Length: 371
Image (cartoon, rainbow, N blue to C red):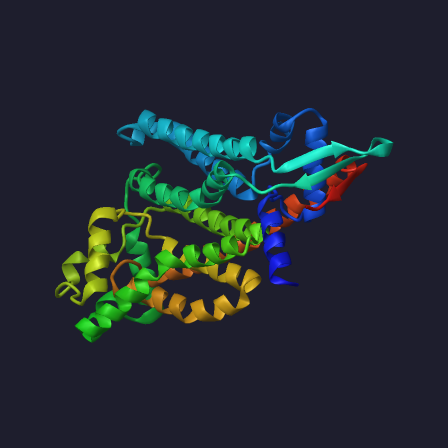
């Protein structure tokens, strides 16, 4: 494929509203069908309700947590405020999806002999690119919102911390208290390396998502977001029913001193000081999110899996070294992150099958003309 044809192919791919498992020609015919039905608004009305699996998971989590807020409102200081925020976030998700659908009309159609219509792909406008970008990247902000909100939800169901159970489990498993035992090996250099490994968590999803977005692999992109959403959602619900505050708080009297290091240590301390959530330690959302992305890399960009694997393993160790998690939290995060991948992959395949059946019925009598 020549450079010119390759660039045109990427432009054509970007110009179509991605639906899982639907090839370019089929998606174009679906858009042409909407145009034949009346106007670009008809097309938007057809596409707007079709959320990605990510949206269904996100809205499902908001629904479950909202129901729990209503049921256990007596355990909260401001239940109505939390419930209002939940509703607002859900409405913003729906509004963003509709906004992109309303401007995303890159298909021009014209009649030809025999009653058939042709569909022509045109380049997206700046407004279309703007909404397309935010439709794809808002999940990162959603994950951050949900994690920070857990600070207010950790005692929604149970008023007591459950750290004693995990401390006992770690001691049974290892014969020591791991975070305390590791303190004997602490040096500024080792602390700095571990804090660097801990910070790599924040770039895993950005890197894999960025690569898939740049390559315009929309199916791969939403697949990875769905894996992450399912893994996080499972972990969030567990954290609500099983509140754990982490060794940082529960074992604070056992430390001989702070962990000193260099710029990475200082950066982590800054983040922990201003963004720390007291609770939601089990399962580790760091580990769950990292493993969801790791499995996503295995499926969609195998070379990146091998680059990320040693970093993810070091990151897991750093959560105990830095006193943020118990060993049990790591196991819990691995399980929930892997479940996120398995369930998320099933959701993507299920939506592919549904859209595939719809296209066979709806896209008859159209032909595609490429510019």
